[in-house]
Length: 241
Image (cartoon, rainbow, N blue to C red; front, side, top):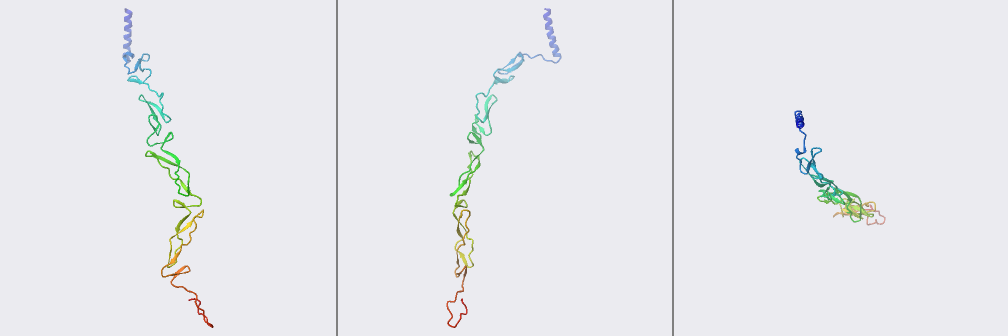
């Protein structure tokens, strides 16, 4: 009996010494309250989540969720957020499995893009051929924009006239009418030579009322040869009148 009392006294004395030294009594599992789906580990005297659960064992553990079996396609990565499995999509992609295009992005095969390169639009006029080229178009307002028109050149035997190709065109008259005359037209046709437009010819003109044409001029009078001959033994005083 003396021996038992001695042991109790020794234990009490040891605890008193610890308390006096500022030490607290060792934690025991029966003194801990662990969260939901957690238990006290006797080996460490601390709360630990049950197998298959994760989280804070002191406040509660939730069932562990993994990405096993979750597919996010070629444009996403599976992640676990707050116990839920979701797909974190790459830039430009959306949807539960990242298989759709995000707003502002357009589909191009299996990709989602804001811009892409396409052939220019063939809009050459008659007697012309488009020059093939690649142009960039944007995805705007929910649709791909139309490509710009290709440049073009006139076919052999045709020259460019504004936005068309032709074998002839009208140009302004290169000449002016002489004094007291008026051009009969303001334009004249020129032909395509195969390398350039031909030089225009002079436009016709007519003398104004009250004037007659004298060579390349218009006048109210002109000098002509004398219509008569001098009589025998006589000489004309002039040859023109």
